[in-house]
Amino acid sequence: MEKGIAQAQYFVDSVDSQIAVAEEMTFNLMFDRRLSYLTSNNTILNDYELNHAYLAQQERLNNLKLSSSLISSAKIFLPNMNKIITDDSILTMDSFELVNLKEHINKSQRGGVYFFENSLFLGTTGTRVQLDNQLPDIFFLVNFDINKLESSLKDFSVYPHSGSLFYIDKDTILSSNKNNTNFYLTINESTKKIKENNFKNQIEINNEKFQILKLESMYLGNFYQYIPYKSLFNKPDKNLLLLLLLFGLSIFLIYIFSKYIDRNLHKPLSVLVGLFKDMEDGVLDSDPIVLQSREREFTYVFSSFYQMRHYINTLIEEVYVKTNLVQRAEMKQLQAQINPHFLYNSFFSLSRKLERGDTIAAATLADHLGKYFRFLSRSSNDVVSFNEEIEHARSYAEIQQIRFYDRIQIYFEEIPYSAINRAVPRLIVQPIIENAFKYGLENREENGLLSITYTELENGIIINVNDNGEDLSSTDIEKLNKQLFDNNLTELTGLFNIHRRIQIMFGEESGISVSQNSSGGMCVKLKIFF
Image (cartoon, rainbow, N blue to C red):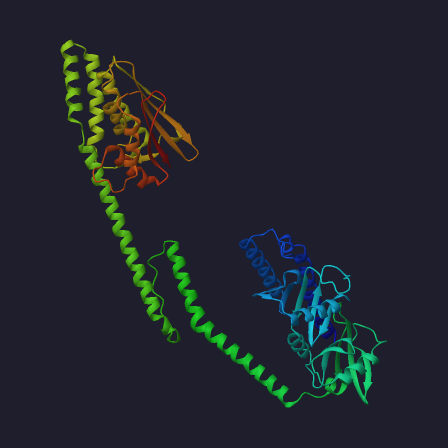
């Protein structure tokens, strides 16, 4: 019974709430500034603005109608303009509508909702008092759908011969059964002294006992729900037993179907998901799973999965081999790019020093040349320690220092201890220094400067190669940067070769960047994340 009281109270509160919302919305509409322009023929609006104002009110009426399923229509009467605005049209008021309007104005003066011609209305003029025979500037009229209200009342008649009703007065009763007016009048008289919100109230009408629930509505008087005693305590009929049987059978069939789905669909799919997770972890060679006879529907799916896995595995092997071959080919190409002018100039410098009897300088130059070419000719390993790579670059720089001793100064910073024994690709620093001489320092007649410094990172290092050459413009440097990220470049430049090999070994975050330094020369940053 407590559940029944809660359901009835919710229904009454819902109806009251929808009427209250409609009442509040009509009140808000009354104070719309645009509406005030429509109350007199002497409006300051032109035809376009007037039409726009009408359409605005139509839209607001439509919103009011859509705010509740109980509202069947909403209108604004404008007596001075002789117009009626509805939620879907604008009408001219005739004599019949004028008489009808006066009736509504008279009934609405009592406040709240009212019944008129078997319909339920909410009407307001914005004021409680009207002078005799004087029409208001504006009158709002909301029509509620009685059929929907009565249909909702029928939903409470779950027991045979039970019913529900709103009793407003003896002439105004909304009920689930319109043929019991005298019976409803008797209920109202018999329940004047009973408690509200209580389903234990009992009355007797025509020698028949009823269980009565009485609630109060803010707008629709009293709500009654009545149930005959004989309906409450009768044994379930055959239809109810049949319904219970069908319900039990449905539950059983749902259980059987869920077990079938779990065994024949869910389990094979779980296995397939597990195989995909193994692929994410790099497992590409596990043994194929043998499906049971009831899982044959998934044979094609699993077969396709294993074919795909084999194909991916093959592609990975091919890409790995191809990448390795490309790396080696590019290394060979870089080793073959020994500048013949550098070789000639080095031997020429060596010859001149010997001719002058400068044996110490000649020995130093020969020693550096030996180290330089021994490093280039070594082909057993494409990876060297960071210290070996820097020493090779230092040998090349020392050779150039001997050649340009009176024009260029070279500075090498000490290698950070954390990077000395790190493995790096061969020939990644010397070609950058060679670029600095070729495009920046070679044509400088005096005060040339080349510095190789380091910036330690948390998990890597940056090699900074700076020169103060004047041959490269900002446009040239911008072009170099673009080439570093052009994967379709057909001619492999030295910088691009280094950039790609660094990224292959250490990842996309590593690589080369080129900029113009404060002296106007080129700054090449070689970033490596170990």
